[in-house]
Length: 175
Image (tube, rainbow, N blue to C red; front, side, top):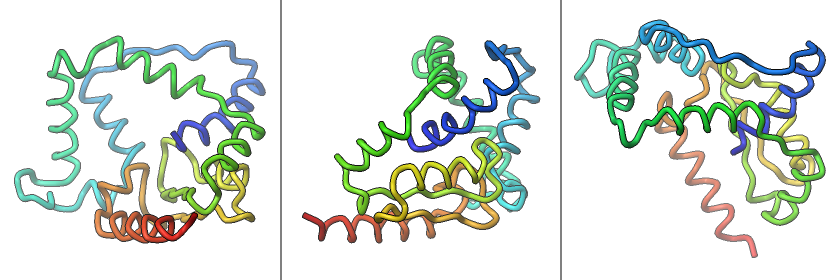
């Protein structure tokens, strides 16, 4: 949810400034799609590193195999589901007032915004805007991770687990 909200905050302004009325979804060949996804979602250092499980030459090859396997699942990966996700990502909107209300209800101490500096899906300023709008100065935690992309839980499992564990421990002690 956080990435979609951050994307919206800046994305709506860009679309309006460019005078765009809609975004066309132009199909690409699967290998072009996979290459585009990999470079937008992950850091090159992670993609090029040897597969951590040893089944593929690189992490990038593992991701491509996982993505192809997902796409072959006719029940789990449907065209309708894909289109709905694209629409949600492109037109999801939360106003600053809605974000403040969300933060009030959840509690700012319970909110953490994680963002990789090499994320090409959602830029760092989106994450910074999200943290600010949610109330970074009132207790929202913002962590910008150097050298990582959009999928932090895959690129740096140990860091992600430790960060999540610290957040769980922190929030367990809140009322």
